[in-house]
Every structure is written in C-alpha cells, then in structure tokens.
Image 1 (spheres, rainbow, N blue to C red):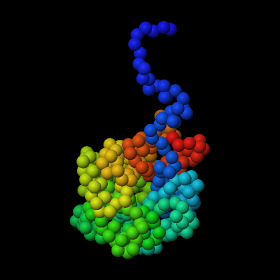
Image 2 (image 1 turned 180 degrees about the vertical axis):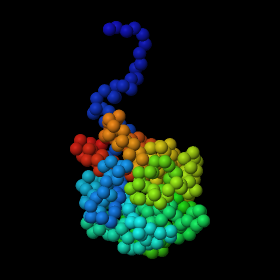
Image 3 (image 1 turned 60 degrees about the vertical axis):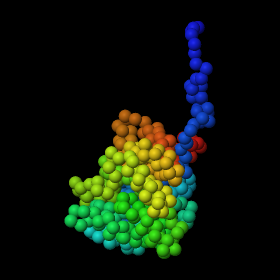
Image 4 (image 1 turned 90 degrees about the vertical axis):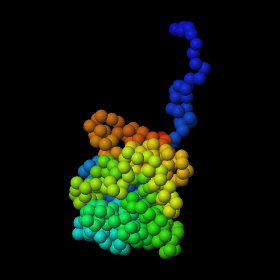
Length: 337
C-alpha cells in the first residue's frame, strides 16, 4: 500500500524490533549482583512458611547457612538477617538484643564459619524484634525515647560486628544513631564494618507481612511508628535525612519501601551520588504473589519488571524476597534482564 505524505526519519521503533537489539540498547540491567536476599531465622530445626508471604520461610540456623551457600552459587552478593525472637526473650528494655548468644549472633557466626567472606552478612540494628511492645525503640509513658535508644543501638551494632557481620543496618529511624554507631565501632577498632543506614524509611502500610513473619504485629497491636518513621507525604525531608546520615558516617543509604518511593530513590542518587539501596518490602512482594496466584498477572514477569524499575530509578542494589528466584531465572537464561 502506497501512503502519501511526510513520514519521520527518526523511528524509535527500529531499535525495538529484535530481542538482541533491545538488549544492546537497554539502559538498565538487572543481574544477581544487584540483589540482596532478606532471610528470616528462627530458633527451631524445621522451617516454617510465612503465611502472608508465599514462598518465604522462617529458616533454622542450618537453613540460613545453606541459603547463604546458595546465595554464593547464585551470584547474590549478600544476605540480610532478621531474627524471629521467642516471646520469652522479649522485654520492655529489649535486653536480649545485647546478648552475645542471641539468635542472630549465633546465626552470623555459623554463616561466617561456612562461607567466610564469600557472602556479605547484613544485620538489622533495631529493637523491635526484642521489645514486648513491638517498637523500634525504648518506650516510656507512650513516648519513644530517642537518645536512650541510641545508646542501646550502638551497643547492639558493636555486638553484631563482634559476631562477624560485615554490615550493620540501623533501621530504627532514631535521630543521631548513625553517628553513635560509627563512633562505637571505630572506638572498638571495627573501622572495617560498614553502615547501611535506613535513611529514608517511611511509615508505610506495606510492612504488615514482615511484622507477621517476625511476630511483632501482635505486640504492636493498633499502634504505629509515625513518630519516628517518615511521613509518606514528604520528599524534601527524605533528602535531609539522607544528608544527616551521610554526615554521621553512613557508607550506604537505604530507601524503603522501594516501589512507592521511586521518586525518592531517584532524588537521593542524583543529589548525593552515593551507594543507594532500596528495599522491596514484604507487602510489595505479597501483592505480586497474591495477584499471580489468582491468575491476574504473570508473577515472574511482574517480579522482574518491579525490580528493573527500582534499578532504573537509581538503586544500586535491591533487597527483595524474590532474590533467589530471580537469580535462578537469570542463571537459567544466562542473561541479565
């Protein structure tokens, strides 16, 4: 068919017509090396599924060691550990967080014995797994005590470093905690331990399945964390938070949740040009899995796409519960995405 008229000389569709050509011009790639695997550990021999997170289990210490070895074989650089603490070890003052024989310390030592430095171990620094009230800090008369909590967090971070973790990741959102942790680590001769600051962590509705997995949801009850986690409405405040954490000695910064904060990831990376991580949180994972289970979406493609756009926004690495499945897929196809 002959069509008369003027037509464009620049046709962007030309570079989309073949898979190999799309791969050549792709601006963003997703590879196993871009992923961090969050893992729940509990003090039982058998694994236990997390009902609200299909495909995710609470693992024994031995199970975590096996998962860490699998991460190495899949090319996943690091795991992030989250302990499921027995109720008998929870208290108002989170004393068990400072016990060198607590679950996470024993897990770190076990992984280091098996894997050495072949896989990075990132440990959460926060009190919510250990508090009877489910908050990330010490509570008095309904108020979270900032400075008193920071003192405990610095001691917790040092304990985790002594157990053998490579990175401490304060997720509590107390003011000044990064500087206190850096000071404590350096004073103890642990200048080698990195700090990954949860610098822009929002008070999000997407954390529910995570709290179910840890068993902190019941303790928190109808309460919320809005007096210390960020207001979802705010963007400039996130940039201030990141700047403060970097000034206090953070080596890397985190934005959480990832999927609802793509604009924040982009702003942080553009403004500071520092290693910027993002956490695809439990609710984001659960939504994709639930929709896939109902046949409403292609779960695998949706997972890949969701991670790729987080990378496109500027994230250098993504914490995601999809990490092992995505890494296996990429290994099977022998490609990045």
